[in-house]
Image 1 (cartoon, one colour):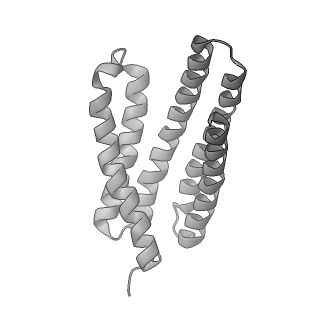
Image 2 (spheres, one colour; image 1 turned 180 degrees about the vertical axis):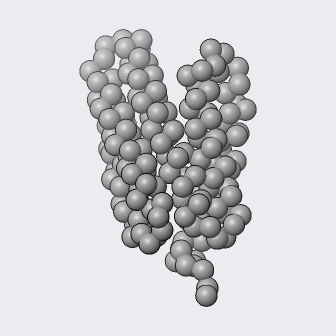
Length: 160
């Protein structure tokens, strides 16, 4: 099962690159499109690096070693989410309309960055983890899901 999980993460990284390219193609006329794409690609690359830690867990012989590899994976992935947050902020600026989706994308991006920063700055982060989870999850679910649905329905273009 773990091996399938690793493959699922690898496939996710591939799709992240495809989504970065597609968003670039859709909005390439916008001045921030390149920058947004670079940050999305940084996220994908960092996620790819994080995945390298998972096969090492397969070779581990103790629960402590396995959990250590998982911790390393989570730390690297968390750093990638910081860059994903920057991408979402820029994406919110790029799409502009619908304003509510752009707003939630921007807030979600800020929350990804705040959460990542809090992991490293707050020594007692675990006491506040559920609050931070809600602060990230709510705007990201609303913003990212709404944006995906809007892209499917409207094709990313507002009526003129």
